[in-house]
Image (cartoon, rainbow, N blue to C red):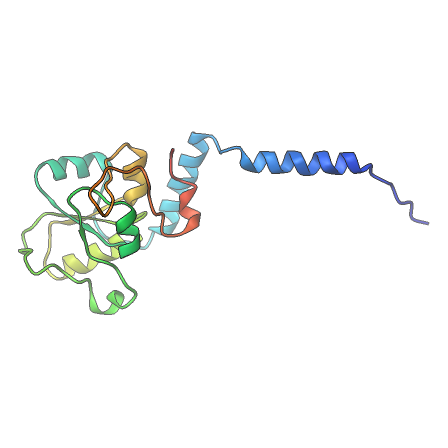
Length: 176
């Protein structure tokens, strides 16, 4: 015969309360950063575009590089790197290639970014195939830029700390 153990309701309540509190406590920064690096390695594994880190991107920006943001209009309106041009990436671009601003000569140095680097990586691959040898991908995208203290502006050009992370799964990698 099976014996049923009665658990006092206060223990159940305590258990629920503790598990809820643990989910509200943010992950330690080093754990979050390690998870982000792992996500980048996994999600960007098939991207063959040359990449730059945030410090190299800053150096290129100081030299006057063209910045292309391949996120959506909505993402761009929330925040983007100052001086960036919006060149939204769509699924159709996997076949047709990116929409390229007509005023960009082939020898133009270009830094392309998105949320983490997948859309921008695909855009850089297409740009380089069209002869833009100076196009590079910002590895880690706007999330890495933000996490390393990079300036962001909204649609009205006002400085902002907000980042539209494309998908909620990326929001957890943003530092406050």
